[in-house]
Length: 325
Ligand code: NAP
Image (tube, rainbow, N blue to C red; front, side, top):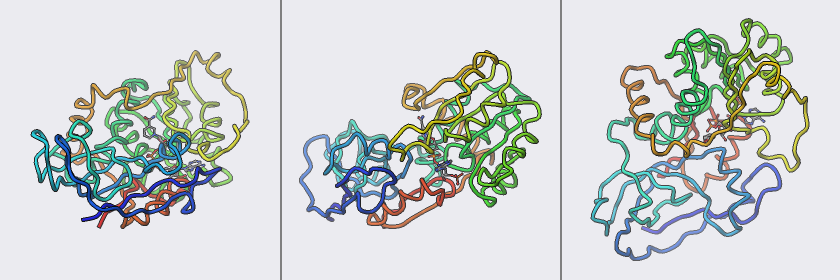
């Protein structure tokens, strides 16, 4: 079994595309002590990887998390046959040291959820919302990219905790999904010319928590509607990731002054020592039938660059995954 891997050959100036990547096939290497060989089953494609492309060197393997099956092991703690998570990047058959591997929680079914609603994106939703947002029943939560991997879980946890939820997304189909399937109170398509009117109508009591996944003018509009003591969490700024220059816009930071509100950025890995708490919460939601999810699946490692670009055009619907066949 050879290993196929995708390296970044050119840093993107703006939107990433196929010309930024190259597929390389290499022969198997021999395992050293404490190493395992993994056959990749699922590769996660996430917006943060765009930022990683600015930081890695040309010729480096693209970063990313995968789920795979251990097919050969020289580890005493990770046996052959184990289903594991690893940040080995865009590879089909990587060799990884045991210290860089986690065994997938056996309660997670289907397995792909360990990269989505019960994986890093779900944990992002859980920790951001509960530890920074600290929602109280009856409060209004607005979440941008509300139908996506993180946003869909933010909205569902908020509903479970008794909040009113308004989801923002880029198509009528996504709006329908948020309201009909995920149970959000309102969904708004920000691509419609009258979307700020819809925002007014759905936030008549103002906004107590804004879970920001996108930044830019969408966030400016929502911040204009925050209540006293509101909490604004900066989870992501996807509308800005492909800009070569900082985008200027309305400067409504005075809202935080007059409303005595809080603005806080966070990174999910800051909560790594508490992941078990988040996993238990999300597994419980899954078992109770309270955690709905959607996945966009593209097959074949050679299609990873094409699939990745979907995140920035909104063509993904829910968690974007690559299935390795
Ligand atoms: P996702 O929502 O599943 O997919 C990305 C979505 O962003 C697209 O489907 C698109 O949806 C929307 N989008 C793309 N370009 C946009 C633009 N210019 N303006 C407005 N919306 C745009 O992705 P995800 O994995 O859940 O991540 C969501 C955000 O959370 C990202 O910003 C990511 O970087 C961030 N994140 C942060 C952490 C952390 O630790 N802080 C962890 C995970 C993720 P529409 O069709 O609705 O436009």
